[in-house]
Image (cartoon, rainbow, N blue to C red; front, top):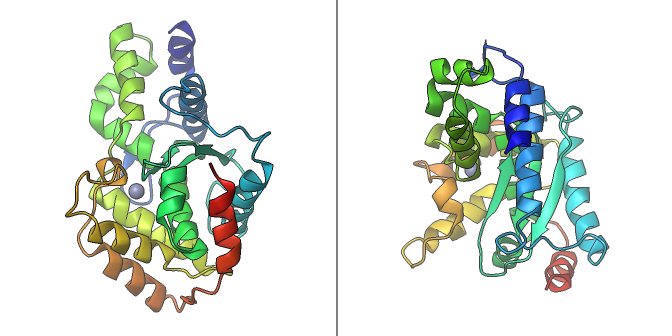
Length: 263
Ligand SMILES: [Zn+2]
């Protein structure tokens, strides 16, 4: 708790309007510090987040990191050089989810990888998650949720510890807005358009997810990533309008080998 407190009190105060019009009180360094804090909490809780050890699954991690690097090399990721872009696999074949902490810490459940039929689908989801971090949706939402006056007091050190704990706790279960979802979808296309992959890979993932929405339980992905209207259509339109390649021509055998390499 003390470390958390020190971290939050050390947050530098910035008041800036993003180019999407959102006010974000946090600095880029705050995003990285909050993300690192969240990563440490995840790593310290193997019961809830059983991370696959890199030492035992080096090839799986290399495969993920190659995809991440291809996206970063698109030239479209604003904080490609500033954020650490760490990726982690969570060993939970029954959970269909992925999440991004601020500052570019990406967590992918093995259940999501099992669910997807092709590498291009997965690359689309990676682009979407990386966009949430790169577009700073978490700290936008924190600014909105707590209000500028409360956050100013916290950042200036005038607030009670309980409030600070609340803020960190809310980061874990933060729900993005539908507007954030649409923006993450759009940026997934923008990033992937500059790569060898299909630019609309996220669309087929969301289509498959939507097809299963009638069933229970609702996939965990939708609890933190609300489904905006016309999502699949928006992704496909964005790809068309930008003249992006939408051919799924990644190696199927390579994707299946990746799936089989996981527990
Ligand atoms: Zn999302």
